[in-house]
Each structure stands twice: as C-alpha cells, then as structure tokens.
Image 1 (tube, one colour):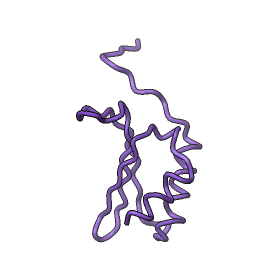
Image 2 (cartoon, helix red, strand yellow):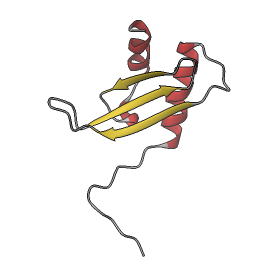
Image 3 (cartoon, one colour):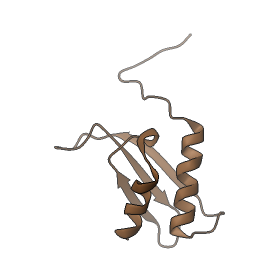
Length: 86
C-alpha cells in the first residue's frame, strides 16, 4: 500500500547528484572522504523560488551554501559561482 500525504517531492536523478557532488569536490578542493550533503527543500520565505538546494560541506568549520534551483537544474556554472562568493 502506498500513501501520499501533502506535496510529494519530485525524485532526483542519482546520476545528477553524483555529478553535482563531483563538481563540488573539484572546485572546493576538499578531500574525497569529506562528506557532502545535498538537500532539496521547498522554500517558504517571501520572494524565494519554490525549490532550493542546500549544500553542506562537513569540513572544519562546516560550510553551507544555497542555490535557488532544484538539484536536477543545477549546472556547472552554478557551482563555480559559489566559489567566487567564498
């Protein structure tokens, strides 16, 4: 039996997650053993796009970034723009 309550989050392509993580490891030059978390969330703040992706790097100190796009819509340039704002 399958129950669905409220808004169901769209499934994210696992290959896209792996690609985005690869870009993050490359551009932040962090060790491949450092965990990275990608969370696709519904944004409820005023003037915020409906979906945002939160990127958490488990470095010391931890780092967190937001991209106002779904994971499947993130491209190479989005990650490089994060670097320029470090």
